[in-house]
Image (cartoon, rainbow over all chains, first blue to last red):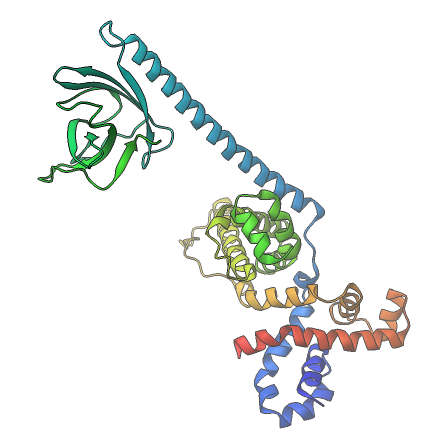
Amino acid sequence: MSCDDARAALLAGDIESAASHIASCRSCRADEASWRRWREMLMEPSIWEEPSDHLAGRIFERVGSAAAGSAASRIRRLWVAAAALLVVLTGALIFANGRAPDWSIPLVAIVADPGTAVVVNGWNTSTGTRMELHVAGIDPAPDGHYYEIWMTSPDGRHVSAGSFRGEGTVAAWAAVKRSEFPRIWITLEKMDDNLGPSPTTYFDIVG
Amino acid sequence: MDAVRMMRRLAAGDSDALRPLYDRYARAVFTVCYRSLGERTLAEDATQQTFFQAWRAAATFDLDRDPGPWLYAIARRAAVDVYRRERRHRSTIITDLRGEDPEIAVLPPSFEGMWEAWEVRTAVDRLSSEEQAVIKATVFLGLTHQEAAESLGIPVGTVKSRTYRAHRRLADLLAHVREATA
């Protein structure tokens, strides 16, 4: 009798026919208890019981509901973001002390939640650039931090145009022309001695 | 559908990919839950919880791995949760004043050998339906070859040869468990 025959015999409960092989085979002797245990498991109802026919349906229904809930939640967030943007744009048109902005650009969320929105209205003045930012849906800056608005030239020179802590309307000024410093972007800054922009960009012009 | 493709689809959020996972593993999941909890209703609760958790956690699954052990781990956790939930519930009903904390209670012996039960069930599922029938008749139901032949409507000789082949196949299918636990 081979080892395979002996193991099959143990599973079949045919101890007698496997006995002489097991007595002479160290490997099978070492494993005998396992094979006997699995034989006993084959006699347990749990090995042969089937889940009810309804169970699969219940599981797929639950998963389907949860998946639909997630999708609905995503759609709700998009609607909130769209509504926030509409409010921002409406405010932008009403604003400007009677004078329409010279330019208006939306900033795209880079790190911030995609549901947040920033629109920048700008006026080109004789002393530089005046801006008004409409910020919606952004989390307040953590303690010891603030958001900073930057204008950057194509050759990489940065000028700070102001800072803010959270959503709302933000007035910003910079003593440079938008035509020379076209990039407008926002970073989250720590209140420290470093006056340059941090590596993390929250909003930026994309395009 | 192969396991990697199935898990990749599930990880990508395709809830339809749960069906092939269920078809392949539901019986093994149900077996370990039923064996440990001892009641069909509770076992189905734990099985449902297992597949729901698997669906939710699919994005974290390592696609290079076999989904079987991963699903087993979720099933075991689900069975333990159901056991503790029931224990808490029953302790409340009978106003158990023994001061035992159901959260830290030692699991009963039925929770031992769960992995081996998973492997045995998986091996049985891989037998043909004819092989399963003769093993069930002769081992689980304890019928003689003659009785099994009458019950299954096949000749005694066929029962004998089929039983022999089925046990050989089972031994092959369980060999890796022997090596893993030796």
